[in-house]
Length: 513
Image (cartoon, rainbow, N blue to C red; front, side, top):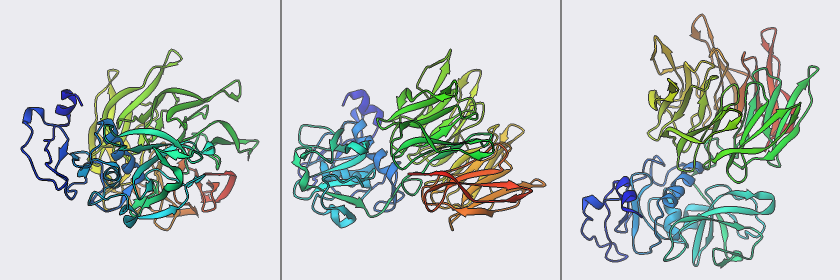
C-alpha cells in the first residue's frame, strides 16, 4: 500500500509481536493508516454495519465489507489483524478472519468454528447453484472463501472474494461449481455456509425487480431464467411477456424510462447495461459504461438519458448521453450506504440516496454542475425504500423507527421529515406517483398499500388488494392509478383504479425470479 493510501485511511497502525497479540509501539502518526493491530475480539462494526457485532447484516453489507479489504489490498496474515473506520475490527487477516470480518462477527473465527455461526446449505457443492451473495465455501480443515456473485449461473461460474495465502492480498477471483478445484483445494472438500444472521438482501430475498412506464403500457421485470423481459398493452390487453435481450445479474434492478423505450439493468459481468427500441424493435443490450457494485441500485430520468448507480468503490456515479453517445461514468459526490436505493426526479437534476451515516441525502444540479451531496433531513433504517416525485420536491423513506416518512420543499427549504402513516415491511420498496399525492408500499402483513392526500392531508394507509412476495418490486404510473408488484406465487401482477375503486389484483403475464 502506498503512503498516499495509508494517509487517506487515517487510522493508526499497530504491530503484533505474536499470535497472542502482544502490543507493540504505535506507528508514527505521519504514517498512519487503517492497518494491522494485535489480534483480539472485534471491537467495532465500522460504518458499513451491522448495527451491532454478531447482529443482523444484509447481503449488500457483507459484500461491501469484503470489497473494502479488496480495495485496500489487505495482506494475508495469521498473526496480524486489520482494523479501520469502515469495516471496524480488528479481524485477523487470514481466510477465516476475512469471513468473520465480512459477516460482522464478534470474533475472528477459524475454518472449523464458522459452522457454529452459520447454517450448512449444501454439504456437496459440486453443481450447487443455490449460493447467494455473502455465503461461504468452507473447507473446515484448511480454507474458506466468500461467494460474491454469479458470473453465469447456467454455466456454474461465479466470483469469490478471499484472503488466499501468505504473500498475497485480499482479492476477487472466479471459480466454477463444475471445476475439480477451488483456490488450490479439491472442490469436494468444501461445504456451503450461510451466516445465521444474514438478511437475504436489502429487499429481504432474491430481488424481484420491476418497472412501469409512465403511461402504464409497459412493465419490465426479470424472469425466472434471469432474462430481462417486458409485458405490454395493445388493444387494451396485456400481450407478453417476452424477453427484450440480455440477462441480469442476480441482484440487478431493472428500470424503464417514462416512454419505455429504454430499459437499464446490470448484466452478469457487472456492467451497467441498456436495451433500447428503434423502429419498433429492441436493439440491445449494450453496456453504457461503468461497473456496479453488488447490490447497486439503478435510477434513470424520464428521458432515459441519465443513469445513476453505485460503482465498485461505493461512489454515487452517473452516465449520461451527449450527442447520442454515453459519456461516463462520472462521480457525482458522496458514498451510498450498501443498502441504499437511488431516486431521480424526471428532469434528472435531483438525485436522492442514503449516505453511509444513514442520512437521506440530495445531490442537485445548478449552473450545469452537481452541487452536493447534502442531507435533506431524517435518517433511514436499514433496507429503507426511497422515492421521489416528478419534480423532486418530495422524498419518501422509512425512518429508524420503521415509520413511513416524507420530506418536502416549501419556499426553497426542506421542511421535514414527518410521518405519513403506516409501517412498511422490512424489504418494502416505495413508489410515488408524479404529483406525490399517492405513495405505495408493502405493509408488515404483505399487503400492497396506499397512502394518499386529500384536502392537503395524508389519509391512509389502506391496502389496495393483493399480497406481495418477499423481495417484490413495486411500481406505479404517472397518475398513481395502476400499481405493479410480484404476488406470493411469483406472478407479475397489477391492481388498477376504475370508477374510484381498486379492481384487482390480476396477473399480467410472466413469472419473476
